[in-house]
Amino acid sequence: MIDVIIIGSGISGCFLAKKLHEKNLNVLIIEKSKSLGGRFSTKPVGSGLADYGCQYISPKSEILKQLMENLFRKKLVTYIEIEKNKKVYICPYGLNKIPFYLSLGISSVTNQKVYQLVRKTNHWEIKTNLQSFHSKTVILSCPAIQSQEILDKSDINHIKLPNTSYNSFYSLTFSVSKKLNDKIFYFKRDYPWICNNKDKGLLNNDLIYTVNASEKKSQELFIMKNNDRKKIIFSDMNDIGFSNINNMNIHFWKFGFANEQNNANYIYDKKFKLGLCGDSFSIGRVDGSVISANELSKKIK
Image (cartoon, rainbow, N blue to C red):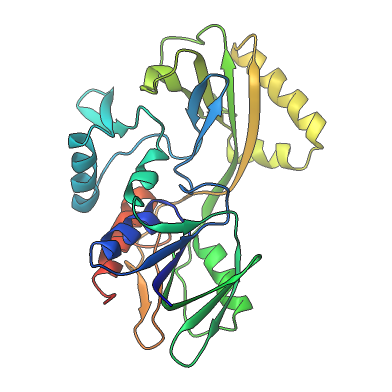
């Protein structure tokens, strides 16, 4: 019997896990992907790395500022100035190292998708595609739409989730032999996010870029066949000015990031010991993720 099972290993789930672990609670994280991190995602590209989810952290809340300063003192993150008097935090080893660090000492299973929660007499049974787990408390930290799917399949209909809209888009990572220009971040109409990971501060010897397509462009790409999509993307990258493109990887973010919002900080049913947190709550994005996890951690005993 586990004290708390957290579904989802993004920044919110891992920060909550750390807070509960500090209370000496037995915590297990269940993640449907192959690795922890959620949208704090980093992948190898050639001989280097690319952040292809969250690109940097710009704290707006006190709790996120405290977390970043703590990680800065531990030399896990550093900061760069993207504009005059505006510093943002990056991780030289890739932003996925932040959830990795937060979950140190905490049990986790990956590559297992939770499809149903079953309420027993005094605990929960959590069913995945491979096995079942039992815990006193369950927390869902994934995007609201995914949490709602789990609740619907579990016939849990007394919880009203916040309405949150997410941007969906394609994220491209690749290596090149020559820099596009001297800018860390560059913007084009159909590709409003072009990032030089090496100049951003990742410890790369090679030039590795992350490029995000706009929502409109992503919708056009989404309905294409794979080969046609790749041809269009390579053609677009050549038109932007990239040459000798290698190690191209194309990832579709169905729930890229939550738009502007002002929701409740979290949901917690004390009677059934069922909670929800993540970027669907509070002010959204990284700040909302950490705020919701921090506030929810105070309710769990």
